[in-house]
Image (tube, rainbow, N blue to C red; front, top):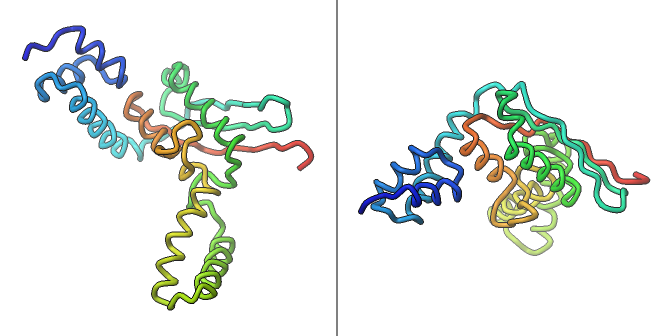
Length: 197
């Protein structure tokens, strides 16, 4: 099948991938748009894993004040270059993350930031709950692991479901941006302000 410029342009607008990558994906999939999108996403995720170790010393600090001025957030989002930090896509990502913090009120950026004593306390509570439900020890341990995932999804920003698309986590949103922008992106820190607290 002949790959037209319009097909390449359509794929590019839907994925944000480069022209040559779009053309290659369409050629490999014989013009199948959905399959080409799937391939580009797979390549992007692999690329984001490789980029994950690169230094991020540029970026933005973005603020968001919720209507009514009772909740506000500051988010530091880092990338590798000032060029990417100034792109509309990076700035939009930073704003979306700031809105996520205001809406979902996480306590930590990721699971690694949860203090060990808080994690042990949460585990103890969950084990007690499982035992009260009459679960044997070996099953209680498995239940605790599942419930800890829910705890992380509530308290850790990167594990939270994205408020605009709950099928995607904030980590997934960041990885998509890494794949499209071609640089490592890291949520460094955030602050949540709630009036009176």
